[in-house]
Length: 465
Image (cartoon, rainbow, N blue to C red; front, side):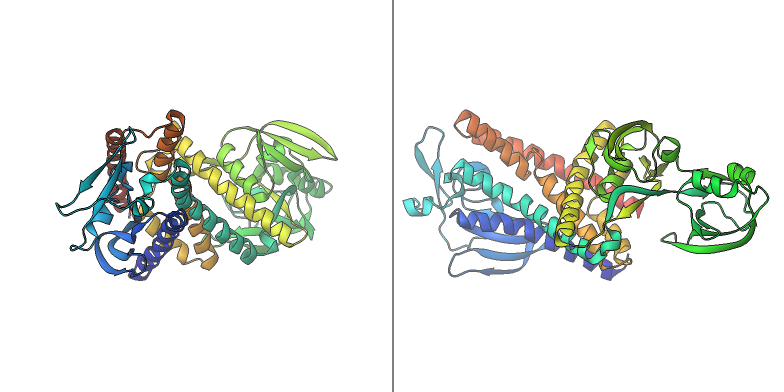
């Protein structure tokens, strides 16, 4: 990684953090809550400016690992004093007074100095802890939802930029016929895909066998698809005057495992096990996620729904995890209308949301190891690799990170937005807030766990560089 890629990673992190905190900020302002500080980054301030109109401090801080919106009365729903960040950023000469709503409905004051005064009723109305539980829920939801919305918007740009040739359906058009022998012969190399035989496009092993079965000792002109040296794309390689018979085909080539399992050309795949699929994107993801073992495919064949049981796909091992690999070609969309674009944007974005939950389930079930988990250091390395492949891939990675950030923050874990939402749900059920001491302990424990995990993951990522 060079310095420019590190700057790019910091810029991307900054955008995602800004969008997240902007969500909290805008909804809090809309709900009438007084904002003490809007900060990007943590630690000591680099730049700051205080609004004369609202009194809000806008700051940029040294450590690019987060951000916060400090609101009056935010800290554990106790005294109206904002978070610790907000207190530290108040002008030293300012007198700060805090209005406390106790569990029994009485009020008292908590002062930073002896000269403090009670907040007026009008000022107390703008404290976070004095807002209704529904407003506090909206404020907590706003940050994660902004990240999810940003991910969807980026995906919309990606779908348009990729063009119609990258919008696939779930209809099967062909199966791969692969040269599998270890030794090269007749010009074939291991991993070549047969594309044409004597000018006829080969869509399945059965079709290729039928094409050459009439003449076992025939001479054929073959075009194969071969992976380039960088491993990034296939190119067409003509192989002329090949002696290709049925025995050679059966001994040196393999057909798609899904074709062997009963899938046919022109089948439209509707479900992978019980999961509905709508486009090639979510189809390929479900095969990757579930197809490492035999799956049931629901297909539409000649107008009739069929269930193909125990369909097998090739397996691939990445980062110590076995995943399924799609082994057939698909039909592209026949139009590039706004409806088609929106459909693919929605499906891809929802698949990313599902991917987050599937990854968490896989992590706790033991399917994924720690190698599959990355923090800021690992993500920076990924950004530097992706940046070399084009702007659309950078947008795609930003979309993935943004949606991940939003969904992870909604998890009901202490110190996350989802943890606050869980406490508010308890408050709705109990019809009174959780005790302040209990909430403080819960959030502290959650913060310690999160920081410990962050350190462990950072060390793992640094070792892997």
